[in-house]
Amino acid sequence: MKFSERIRKNADPIWQASHNHPFVQGIGHGTLELEAFQYYMCQDYKYLIEYARVIALGTVLAPDLETMSGFAKALDETLNSEMDLHRAYAKRLGITQEQLEQTVPGPVTLAYSSAMMAEAQKGSLAELIAAILPCAWSYYEIGTALANISGATEHEAYGEWVKMYSSPEFGAIADWLIAKLDELAAEKSEAELDRIETIFMNTSRYEYMFWDMAYKQENWPIG
Image: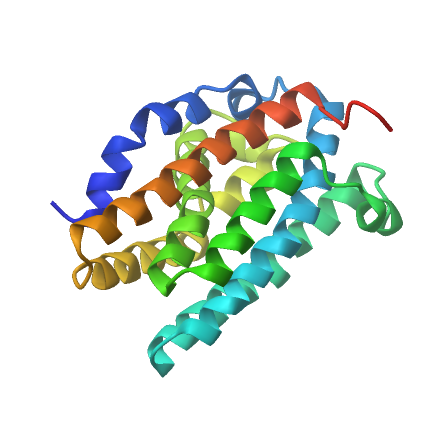
């Protein structure tokens, strides 16, 4: 069994909870309240900025040009394709660029992005990938699953989101990260693999918490 298969299997209860979360299912079936999606878009915009910083650190830790190139492609996809989608959606939903920039990261947004950055700064390249992989991999899984729901890709508000995250271009980034992690894992001890799996499990939990935060539109308890 590949290391990626091992950690995906062990994280399955968390990932299934994300797949079945009412926020995710609401996107696929077109039943999600628009206000919750607007909140999500603003929070995810701030998250993606920090996610991009972590990806950029991957080029610093990369041992060769091929790996550097892979992280550069992932960074371009995040900074341009993903964030362009957010800006286009924001405009369509009546959210200004200024509002996006002035969004205060919620508790889960801040905790999740800080956890990723901490792992990237103190760990190895494998640990960095483990920190960001649940985002790329689970979004592609979710996007692909939602795209199979009748009418999901044509929905006026959510169709472009589903098409983005079910696209071969987005999936290629997730596949590259998975392959790179398996390559790096082959040289690790069991103790190191356990540490990498712990990181993967924790950021998988943060993925679920992010959906839940968006559904409840959670903010800080004291302004």
